[in-house]
Image (cartoon, rainbow, N blue to C red; front, side):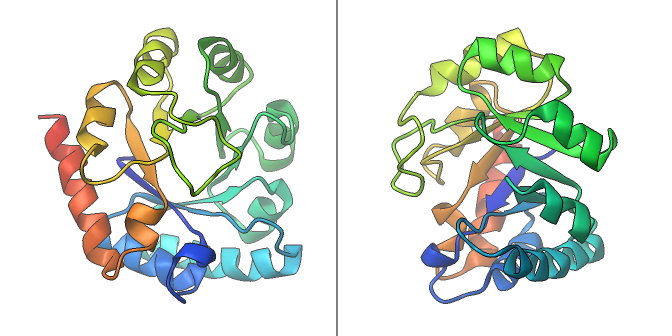
Length: 207
């Protein structure tokens, strides 16, 4: 489904906009970009979402909105990613339709199985390693969490949290289908190259 999954964060992107980050990430080989704009207005999110969706179409890649189902619907995004405390999966499917991607954060076998049963398209697992990018997330749950969830559910797993060039292959070998990154791409001087290098390592890890 995916190999490299890039999450935007303008606070970490060295002055570059979400749209610019998305363009460079797609150029580097990212399969999907998730727009994450915590505390932004709906109008601001829709503006960026429409622009990124256009890029995704141009590159024949995927575009996902974080948390906000309404923005995903209005921008024509490929789907939405929801946390455990966000809108219930069933409601999101009702609004977006069952042909859209619904990603769910789940760090235990139980929550992952529940998400799958309710219709999730993929499971987001993390934070695998300790990260400052999302301090409210469970920190450093480790590679073993990927392995256990991979054994329990048969939908794709997207690992996130502290993933970089030095550990991305470990994550894939532990059972993740894709690696999601923030700072390892958006904070780099050459975003395009950072995405390219990560994608290359992910593909090599499967050989």
